[in-house]
Image 1 (cartoon, one colour):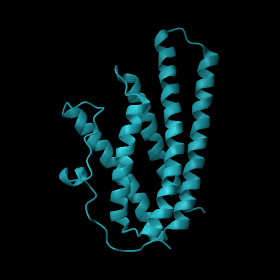
Image 2 (tube, one colour):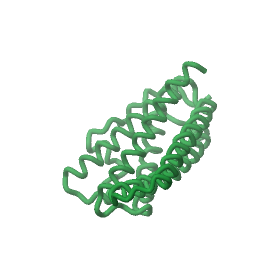
Image 3 (spheres, one colour):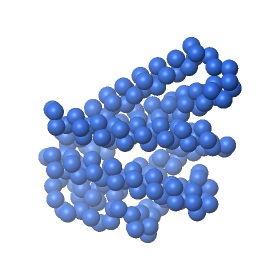
Image 4 (cartoon, helix red, strand yellow):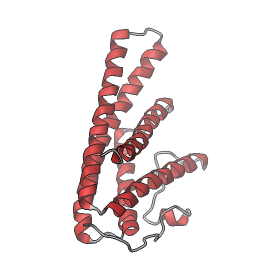
Length: 196
């Protein structure tokens, strides 16, 4: 149990940083993407992630049939919290910008953000337990490393997309887009380990 806590903390921290950075960036955008736009891009990313993860872990059909629903369940919980956090951070920024700071409203927002952090930690804990029940310990480790690297790659591509002057609402992702861009996930599967 003691050894799992740092891993859970690292994974949770990465998701939380991503969520809060996204919320903070959304406040700076004059033309923030809608929840529908975010959902559309997220679906493309999830499809790419599933394809790359299947290849990376060399998943068989039976293991995929157990792992992907667990991932989807965790993703949906995270997405719900991230959407609420974006709204809360936007409202918080509006209050601060107005100069007329309602301390009671600000305290409620901060309390809700803190509750969301706790809920996110619970989602991550449940997800980690499910993944461990599906994958071998070695593949669970590979899964965690894949998730970290995949998120880094996606962030890099989003940043590159912005630098290239493309519309941030157009993800530019294609099924093989990571190979063309020299991404981290080629056919790097070692062929090791499938599910338990």
